[in-house]
Length: 526
Image (tube, one colour):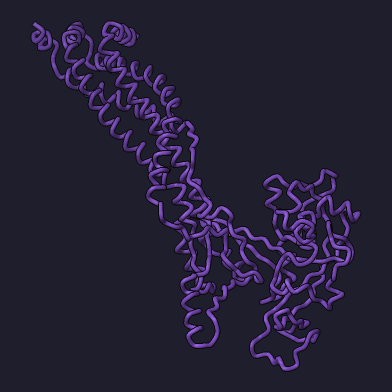
């Protein structure tokens, strides 16, 4: 207790010297607080965007290879240069989900459908049904458009529920589909058709299949039945004169719930009044329900699969595995590094500046502290000699001197953390703006061509074209601001650095004075 009391009295006796030391410690702590806050916040931002962009896989056609193949084909045959987009079958896209490099994968599908039992919202009074056309849909359906038909059946598409734009009706009986063959319908559709939970709704859709190249086409005509892969298909003539083989598929879905829909009925004014584009006509079911309807090589279901790596470093392993599963070399496997770098690079620059600044401040501050402590102890040699002559042990003298600097540090720590937290946000905004401007200057005149796929890549419109991520590298903008936060880890780091420096300075000075004997100290004083 005496040691603590004497230390506090010494702080008051030597105000000038202690104020100077406190100012140095305060400056070190305040700047360290700002640097650590910026550094830790930058780490969080980088980790977040690393998960968001660098871990999401994009499988896209290699445009250069496609062009080379098209040029080679044009050189050996008459006609204009034609580039055909390659396709990935749904079976193969789902096979990729078995890769050991993936953290998770998200798949959903959709198809266009009609019904003779219920009427879609905004459905035209005279709608040509599949039954009336011998199992055919309009020509646009031949190309696999999911908009063909008055209804869109969605398999495992629950994102609107996650976003809060859709929710189950609170009627007490509505429930999410628990198994294949069950579905949800919108409240508007249910009201218009008096649909209740437990009802069975009948739908029909059309699947098409490529006509084998070795198939005899001599007797082909509109409406002729042919057998492909042990399944019967009806031939139809498209507007371009080519034949398409298709079959009608009927399926029944049990209504397990009715959902409230807050989404816009139509995505834009161009689709206004088109029942196939009205979101109130979406029938929500399971992915298995849709895939079970389809046979190999058939088109008509639009499948989307998004792959997420365990870590961006697993990209090479994932590519090797999907190549072995059958992915053609015409496809490129990548992550959205362009978007990632566009956002993260200014943050990385900011982090680098903060770390460099903190290291310089700590080194300079520590050097000044050591110098001030050494001068202070030399001035107090006589005081220490008297205490030692009175019988106080070296350890207690050292503890008293160490207590003094720790008390100063504790006071400066409280003030420094407050000042650093207050200054961190404006300093971050200013430095980030400088980094963004520097990156924009470096990137001026350069075009970014690498897009961000939302997942599996282009599977083709018929076999399941992947829905592209609208937040591609062309649309992503660098961070305009970064909200800094102060966590417990940051506070702990600051406390450790502050008391570590104070202890180092105190022990350094104490080690110099305690090696002298009391008599020698008093003789030097005389």
